[in-house]
Image (cartoon, rainbow, N blue to C red; front, side, top):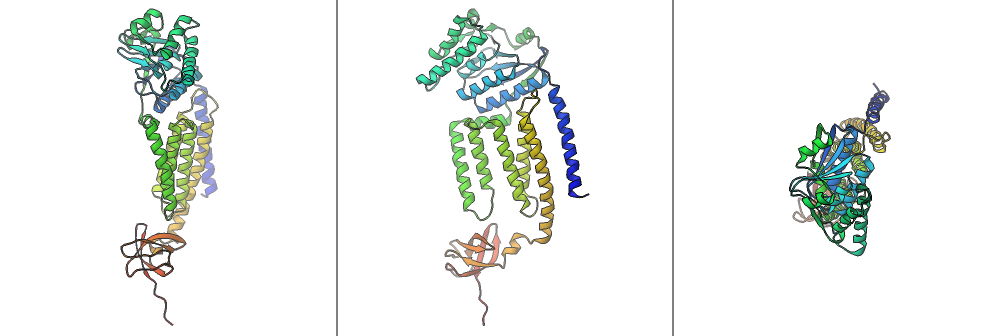
Amino acid sequence: MNISGRFLRVLIVVFVLSAVFSSVVYTATYSSRGKAVVIELTSTIDGGAVELVRRGVNEALRDGALVILYIDTYGGYLSAADSIVKLVKDSGLEVYSYVPPGGKAVSAGSLIALSSVKIFMSPASVIGAAEPSPSDEKTLNYVRGRFRSLAEEIFKGNETLIKVAESFVTENRVLTYDEAVKLGFAEPVANFEELRVRLGVAEVTYVRQSLWESFISLFSSPVVSSLALTVGVLLIFVELLQAGFQGYAIAGVLLIILSLYAMSIIPVNLLFLLVMLSGMVLLLVEIFTPGFGAFGITGIILMGVSAYELIRSEPFGIPSSTPLVIALGLSMLAGLMLYVGYEAGKVRRIKQKPLRDRLVGSEGIAKTKITPTESGVVHVLGEDWTAFSVGPTIEPNEKVKVVDVKGLILYVDKAISPSM
């Protein structure tokens, strides 16, 4: 079968699968009191927590379940808390907050709790202590306004409770379980089982932090993200100094992308789209190198992971999905590239000698001084290479001949000019 016939079959399969997937998307429901997705926010509120909530919200949209935010955290970053609040509000889901026995919803955790329709607390738990750091006037006013806005909605205009929420910020106030219940700020439950019964939940799905979300949490640290950004830039410079493509640039680009995402500069969909494009670049590199090696395998892994995360990061309840269209289109292109790369690799294996065989015996020019102990640079086969001399010292502009290759290092000798 020729390539056009094979590609046509691939297109048909992809369109059938996308149609099936779309039908699943359209049939997602939104309301079922019998199911609940419990999102466990038990660590720092950072980029990883945002992705955790995004995954939990999408799962609830898919299953038509309500959401319970299980909050037991000392807080974290304001930008991450804002992102979580937006995810909760945009979802249109029925969301409840729950602080377990002896737990805490402080700082960013208390802001997230206020984004729900009702707060439940168990004995010995606390909520509040949300004064921002740094507490300059601009930041303080913003956070106070944020708390007031959410409190106005959850407490239906009850000015007393709204003022209490504001005092979390302005006075760094903390409410105990008894205080919160007495004021009507939260409803009492002995434990999660009682909460489940009160909400009429028969089936519970727990959403806990995954390895990927832990990885994002690591990069959310300002120290780690800044260091990764610096290393990424340095790797690109290292790539520019190498003879031929070594892959350092792609590693550098990936570190920069992750750092920018962790700093909330780029959104999650753009993150995975850029990772997918990096994988495509590696596949293109593989096409122009003999065989099917590390670049190709790494490219496939990057594209597969990014396509999966692009689809997973989009709510199932939304019929139109731009990331899904992009992922399908790029996956189809990647499939074509893989086929072309495989065919090109076969041709190159047939028609072209291995690089080492082409280098050994080739002649070039020394660009710098080269000795047996001090490396220099030679120009061979149209590229600059690091080289050592296997004989006497070689001066710049002398002709050289390659006698051995070890990795990317050439071992050369003076080229013998033919006698008259």
